[in-house]
Every structure is written in structure tokens, then in C-alpha cells.
Length: 119
Image 1 (tube, helix red, strand yellow):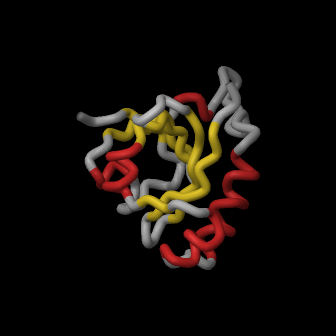
Image 2 (cartoon, one colour):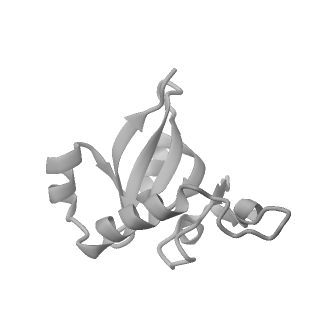
Image 3 (cartoon, rainbow, N blue to C red):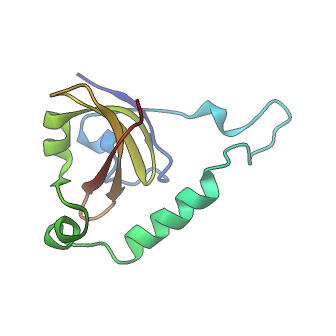
């Protein structure tokens, strides 16, 4: 089963699209007046993305800092991917239907820092 996700990482080969997920274009990047800066999260996301990928951690280092870490196959077993906007993935945990978010790094592609949603 393919999932529709939003990818803002620039289309790298490591994206979920390369892992059997279906990417869809994000048409919300522009408003009706043609303003491209509608997404107020873009600046902070780009900053965090640069921080994560400037010195990507090993699985062991990420586990020491954030706890549990998932590769793409493990992510697909434990979560449904609801949305994707680098460096974040919105997920629903299959075991208890708890929604939350994860961060990810590009290479090696690892997901970490699960933050349960409120409510």
C-alpha cells in the first residue's frame, strides 16, 4: 500500500518515495497572489534540517540522545505516515493509534525523537 506524503526535502534519492511511498506535490506553497513565503515553518524547518544533516549521527549516537530510532522499514512496521515535511514526519503509531511526529536525517536515513501529539 502506498502512502501519499508531502516531501519538502528537495527530492533526494533517500526520500520515502524511493522506499515505496507515493509522493504528492505540495500545492499550498503559493497563495492566490503568488506569494511563495506562505509557509511560516519553512525557515525553522530549513534551519533544523541543516543542523541534523550537517553532522548526521550514527544509529548509536541518535539512540543515546533521543531513545528509539527507526530505519525506513522499521518505521513502516510501527507507524502509518500521515504527512512529511523535512525534517519532520507526522505519524500514527499502529499499536495504540497515538499520533505524533518524528525527525529524520537523510543519510543514513533514520527516524528519531518521537514526540506524541497533544490530545
